[in-house]
Image (cartoon, rainbow, N blue to C red; front, top):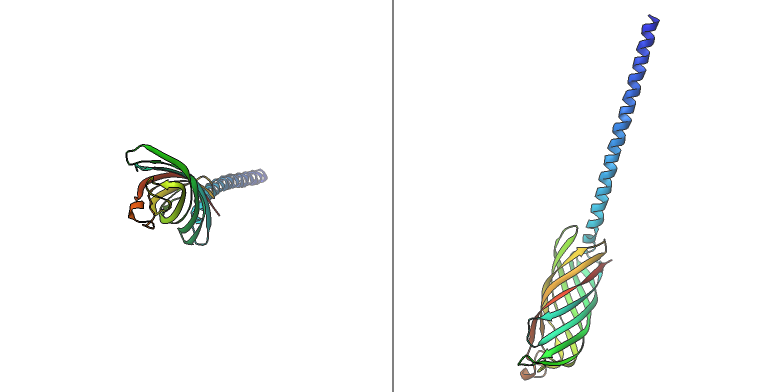
Length: 214
């Protein structure tokens, strides 16, 4: 009788111990899974964070290089640097300093003067598509450019620069993005010195650089 009771108590104790160990194992596995899921979610959140940088009242700094092509009158080789302010979610106003050089071709395609250029652009950008890594935008605006000699060769030293285009950002980190795009770019003086001195210049522009959000 006593031996049977002792055996029953031993079996019961062993069963309880096994059950507790099983619960600890399952709980540990569950916690490990939750931790892994949490880490994965944190990674996704960290990647997705750049989208939040395009909210209203946020700022950007961008710097990039550009080159024009497609117009027989010459080429512009420019560096751009400026700041942007998001007046609404995904919509920013950007003021950018422009500086660089150019070369001109005459009406027969012969190489003309080379020189330096400096200017200022005011552009608006709208990020119409976003995912955790990519952002696509349209942009447009205008500015002015002052050149050391006439550009185009039969134009003037001072010109206006209306432009419009599309671009993309790729998030390297939360606040650092690769930037690139394509624009239509126009150069003319709006007939300030008469139609004969305003030949106009229309070209495509490709550009690439970096954008920092904060």
